[in-house]
Image (cartoon, rainbow, N blue to C red; front, side, top):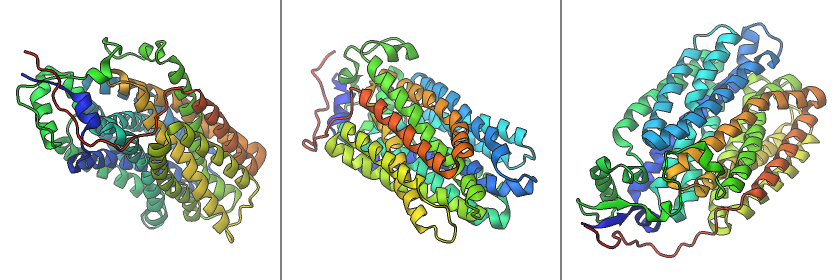
Length: 458
């Protein structure tokens, strides 16, 4: 009987087509998470005149309830992922937010809208940490930052689709159609992935009764694993905690500094990203006199930049590591935000503004999405979902406050104050990222092979 170190097999193994398909399946869930997450901000400019309001300010509480639910979902989803499996927690989250998104299509009041957004937010929040963890545990170590970022970059990709739907579907079929489509598609995807998406191999290694499933999976990845193998994960365990995953473990001396830095990073970065996501369409409609469709276009450019920026950021991290890359992107975002604070909102000459939305949105989203890869790198398998989920959940506090912080900046300083708020928040992200000690290092591309078996035991 051979003892197989799953961590060594995966970390030093090949980057196969099957693993790429698994990342693609995981990423699809986050595309739809991003769609459903950004449907309401894009729908508000269409709901405002239908419900007899003058502007989007009365909807701020309803916009805030979704992130509040996501905070709870991220915390609960991470713990559930460590205890019951990343796949189970991820697909359960998708089913939850899909059903609740469909329900939003039938509301007729801001209160009901806020309640359903809160409950849907629990599912939305639970999906992301488990998708990030699942992606990180399917692939070799050298591909881990890119795989996680490629998964999480689907949040702005989903946001781009949500903005596109708002521009095309809402004018023709009404805003309710947005939520019907946004719920039905995830339902169909969850049913498909329940059949084809496997559990994390690292999670399976810790469950003896599921070792036959792990053997089949590793063989599909191209590893010659004997049917009677015994599985361990020596590289990941070491002095890692052996007890059930808990939030207290994140503040053990080994992780305390990194946890503090990650919490601050997620808090301020999610805040600034959602200051943009929640308020750009309403800000352009109310302050810049853009049409609802054109206002949705502003957020569309933010998300297009986010997709490109996050992918490029992940590639640079593999060469330069995460410290230099993420601090550099944060500094660039500060500069671009201050440039935007000095720009004029003119719907007849909006090309320069949209270009800055593209560039600045790319930087904001790039820092946010690569942050998931950083968190997945900091924590070992035993507490990875808990660590990522808790950091994201803490960040959701900033997410909840974003609509009020951004709204206050907009009320007090107009668009210049609003964009200055972006710069201030990214400065705090810079400081928080500098605190993190265990950044992703430069990744060597050497060595494609891996030794499957450790010394034999009986």
